[in-house]
Image 1 (cartoon, rainbow, N blue to C red):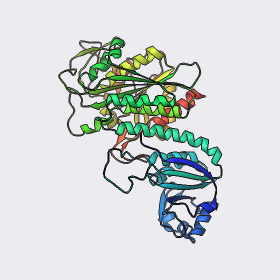
Image 2: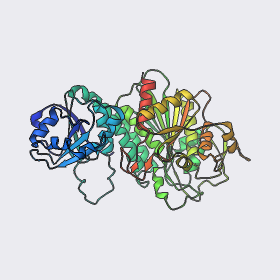
Image 3: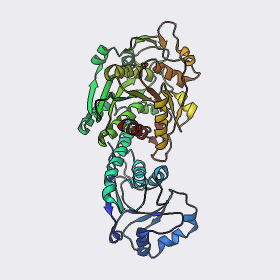
Image 4: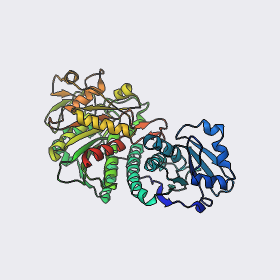
Amino acid sequence: MSELPSLSFVPVNLDAIKDAGGHIVVFLPESGKLDQLARRVNRLTRGALERFAESTSFARMKDGEARSLSFPTGLAAEEILVVRLDRRIRGDAARKAGASIGKHLRGASVLLLAGAMKGLPDIVLGALLRAYAFERHQTESSDDKNKGAGALTVMTTQPDALAAEGEIVTALAEGVWFTRDLVNEPSNVLTTVEFAERLLEMQQLGLKVQVLDEPELEKLGMRTLLAVGQGSESPSKVVVMEWNGGGKEAPFALIGKGVCFDTGGISLKPAGGMEDMTMDMGGAGTVAGVMRALALRKAKANVVGLVGLVENMPDGRAQRPGDVVRSMKGDTVEVINTDAEGRLVLCDVMWYAQERFKPSGMIDLATLTGAMVIALGHENAGIFSNDDSLAQAFLESAELEGEGAWRMPLGPGYAKQLKSRVADVKNVGGRPAGSITAAEFLHRFVKDETPWIHIDIAGVASLSTDSLYAPKGATGWGVLALNRLINDRYEG
């Protein structure tokens, strides 16, 4: 995966500031008052920092914003980055300030003059998240290439105490980066085989990983999943990742849609924009990132992640509109539209997860419907649930992590739209309430005793513009919120 900047915490050393290369970050509160470290920078630069603190440019800055003072006199550094931020700020505001720093971190050396600054874990996490870049397929040279991953050094009054928190922050950032790498990869690189191989490599982190191939899936009766991939040369797979960090309690299950490329099948998509369907495995990418973060931070919970990996292609062997396939549960499904394939993948994996693991709860994630983008745009994922307590806990986790989520309805009226003339259920219910009927299709494969959430991430998994914590492309949405949910609800 892409290499994160290195992170280290060092004690305050005023004499080391003068010779530090790269970028130096200084925090100034609204009052412009300089702390001990800022005063040393001000003295070395012959009052430059103080003059900036008194300027209209600083007065116009918003909290968390950064301004650059290039090639400062008296310092070896090529830049002083002045961040306006109260020294007691924590949480979202601190993370946003970190994002301002992260834009300068890629391939560079950054010395963060934090001193007794509060909220440092949030600042560091914001910086690491925003430092991400997906460049592995670019061969042209640029100013940012060939500089390595970069290094973030935090000069603080509590280096030892913060080092332990830094390990957790790094684990979370690595989980998000892993998800982004998977979602950003082109489909000729991230085939179902390659995807499974990358997940198998996580055994080195302590995860138990099992790959179920087509003969095993056929034996299990996962015909709806297999039908999606039968027109592709890339073999369908289900990958099971287990993290057993808790006691003897039943695991919590995460299920991800992993359509490595989606042409729509026989119900072929329009050519314009089809290249974006490399991200149709975004749900599986999020599940993989969460499992990586849990393993890296040694979470004290039992969690199982399952992803269905397929490719939806038009071919002489591909399933047709009007076909009837039987799910692992035993229900028959009339395939009205082969481009509504994600739910056919998920329903079999969800049923398998419940049969094998008897989970304490289950969340599935999928870039499932374009209708979700129409409903909520790119600000929120859609949340559907049969359990108010679990849904509320996730919504609170998402809000605390700054990941937009909005609860949507379910109900028997929507389920009626899926009534089939020739089978137990249709895979689509028409244009009205398309995201809700998709969720109701999945609801059919949830056992009564299983608390469940379906998350439609079609609008948030990948963006065409930069976001606060990521360049355009994959966002890694959901890794932080799901990690928090597991930490708060299941690690106790």
